[in-house]
Image (cartoon, rainbow, N blue to C red; front, side, top):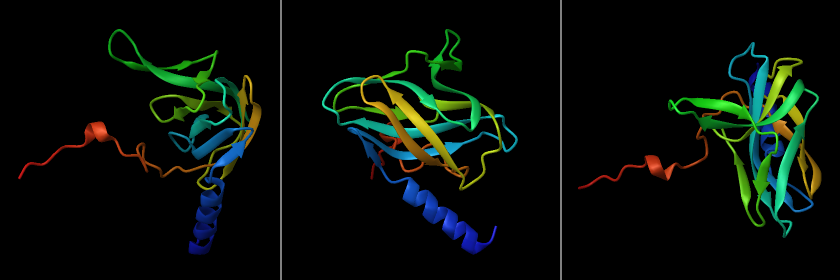
Length: 162
């Protein structure tokens, strides 16, 4: 990929990563990825803020890029092993609260991708809320992003003594 093509892809990704506000639902910092280049599944991550003035529930997600789209999370089993599970009822979105859709936690799962997801692609995703209805967003594919990119994990910080 040429420098000009990369620059245009980066500019498009930045423009599309800006917050989306629809009916009091604000979506920020969205991105999609696959774990391997030939993977038949992928996921989308984002921060969803509720500014509607009432509690809501994210109950579904839709996209034409895969055979199925599901809301997933990770849970630890009795043996301490993390497992990904489909959350059919969705996720609560409290009034003035948020849902953190992050790697290793809640996310939108794309199962049976119809084509590979490549760096800079745009994935249309419709989030379905119990009260706010449907909110359609465009999610940039970012295969280079690190799990905690842009986030500060205060639990991992170490204090240095002099």
